[in-house]
Image (tube, rainbow, N blue to C red; front, top):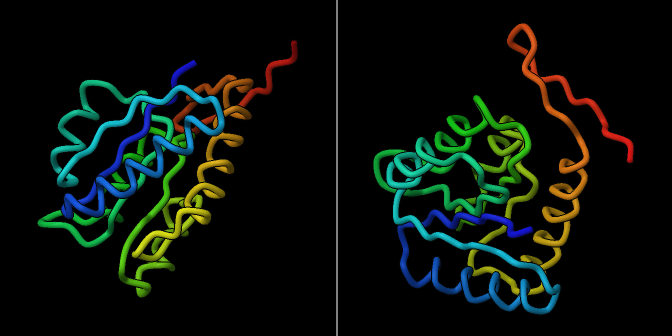
Length: 148
């Protein structure tokens, strides 16, 4: 199975650096990933409306008109299982990450080992979600574990 990962960062060098770590991580773990890079929250949401099958989101917080926290809130409205990781240079937003059940909050410049450890956790959580049936009942998400 290929995991879909989105990197959303208005800094091209930062996004390229994270993408290079991501590619190395996938090779080391023998994991197939499809990575897409978006320069703004709006550009991500445009694509997200067409295909919501992302597994991991690596989001900068400080971007143009819409920040990463607002983007995460928009995604969380209909997707509880996507793993969200904030990667930013601003520590004052850490508390807001809890509102969207972010997996982790990494400070720029990104440390390779820390990002790889967070990606390992994200992958493990995604694998756990694969064996769960999610049903929307009466406006609430109900998770039913599947036994094999």
